[in-house]
Image (cartoon, rainbow, N blue to C red; front, top):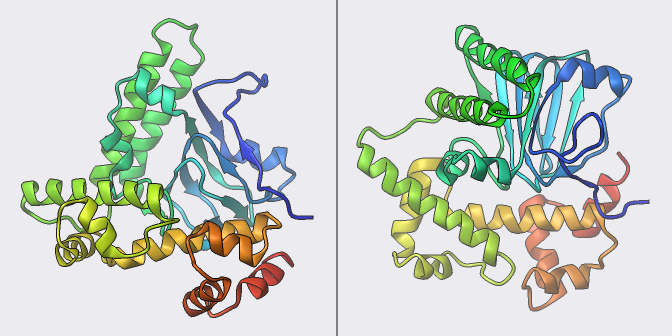
Length: 293
């Protein structure tokens, strides 16, 4: 029986609420008996540091191969599932929004377009074996400070998390333009665009709607978004609608009519045609097929 997908809060080994925790992937694998957990989501941020692994990582219905020396960045609310075919070696870092605020870690370090994504493509960040050693050095320090008594522990952990985010941005494989002012202007526009999509994807489906809110032309918005991400502004809007539709179809019992109206379509048939156009299957066929796994 498929009901609402489970959302996990951040707790420590004793079952107490916490704002930062480091976990060993091998130990997690053993605790589940080597079985993958069900697709789920968190109300906190997650970074997976994978030293060695084989299998797949499913994030918002997209599958990514696991491989040695890579990182995954999972935004709160994203549906994901890790399927390791053998015992992995690596670490999981979980932290809350409050932890970021308490340690003065700016939003731009999280919302940077090259790392965390709220929906759509969430590919791993590959790094060289040599560069991965830098991450392991940070992990060792996190382990050291995590065992200390409260006091300045969170300050140390916050500083180490910030260092990891800075390092990850510098290792990002996406190409950046040479002019730093152009890069920052484009990044700011993209961040605001993605924020607006999350706020209004149910009622605003056109690029022109978002361009108006951002006080730019549709052409400028499209060119700016594509120059940074390789995808058009329209693709970002479509991805957000489709991800939400798939989540609802798979994890709730909402009817096609209810879902269509909730996503801003005037007629259920319009939604069905839209869904089939971009997925090659009807909503009901997607639900039936996905629930077989």
